[in-house]
Image (cartoon, rainbow, N blue to C red; front, side):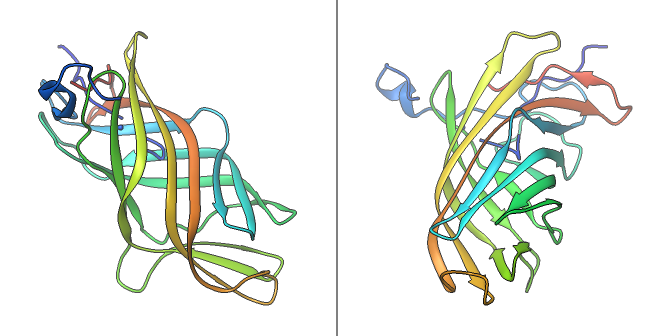
Length: 211
């Protein structure tokens, strides 16, 4: 059985323009030509970081991204649940980010190799992605589309997709006496690179692919 070709993340996750006029704006697809249902599974390559403006940067050594459902070809978006561990913020280390069932949706990429695109953050009503240390709490809620995410198909066996996020203008809320500034801000940024693969419902790995 041929295993499915598909995009992966992150988060998670990340989406150059073609040099030829109209084709430069052409849209690509995730899960292109998949022959059975599969989901994204991704893991970080190096640290993932979120910077809350002047407050500081949280850095996580471990990040995984798991597709919220098994889908078949073709798909114009992919949604994953992020999970972050071994994080450090304001001098405190070893904690997890609380995701609160929030997800990332990677919107349809455009262009050619490497493909580029945007993402949305989705959270249940009244919920947000949260982390805190030394009396300073940061909350990141529903928003988007946010840019930029870049995707590169890798010539590995099985094939993987490198997803590089360099996202700016993220809205967050800072609260607590430990924060040098408080209130809602729009100067958040996220960066990180992940490798993404496809996993079938029988837990087989297939080659990740965007076309």
